[in-house]
Image 1 (cartoon, rainbow, N blue to C red):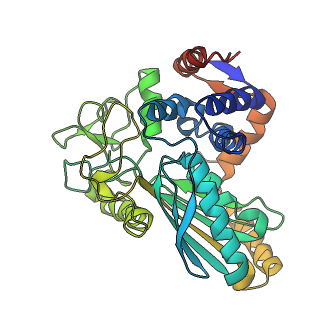
Image 2 (image 1 turned 180 degrees about the vertical axis):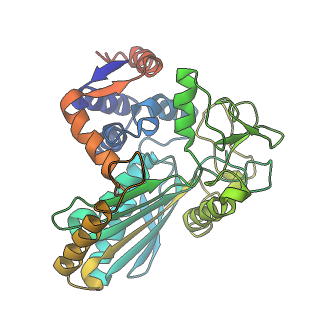
Length: 358
């Protein structure tokens, strides 16, 4: 395990993105999104993913100089074509469109096609907070998840993030996969050589397994809930909603046609759309009630839930966003810890482009 400062990793990431042809602005934006994941403890979606983006670029599946544009719009809605660009860049563009439309119409809704993996969902939802808006961020992803009662991999981990501003209290930020665990969590267990908890994965025959290599061996991730008795049909439904909003609505690929993140797997030769899809929403709080009034009540809501009586062995009730915010404060002081396999991967990536990691 090595610790790195935010600036070290930010500068390294930005230089790599410049090397693959990103503009200064796009390299800056891409590095910011990736490092936000590391700072918030979502290590699976941070710099550990950088080499994956580079491999996709090498395969010609990422356009490092995209012409991102609106292809259809109304006063409160838009469709954005990402032109095959980095999702780390396409998504903030689209969220800004949603925010701009919300500023004029009260709410803004943007679906995106022809994009790639966009990093952590929470980054994009949180962009709305500075505007006294509620932010919503969804994306579909590589098909690694089996619907309840199926052996086939038809859905991605398909995260949902909602960010809600408060007044004195920190914002409410929900950011979650619609699977029991995100694939990145499984990748971390693989790097550590640890098993997966029961309910995360099934093998290729559809049987529960604790192998962290279960998906690699032909199995699948399980929807949130793990099995029917624990509500996996609800996780399946949530993942399906994300897929439909992100892709069926925008013209991106959906279900099993979503292009894989790993470069060694080829996209389906008969796609049903263009690239990966996202969906964003921004809602101006004062389109519903005065912003200060709402935020005061959000403070009250948060304080009441924090004061909830705890179960045995637990000392407090958390509000969505608490663990990430607290870890961000720690990592700002102590640095970002990276596992040895990630350091080796980044070092090798740096050598390829003549850039030193440390």
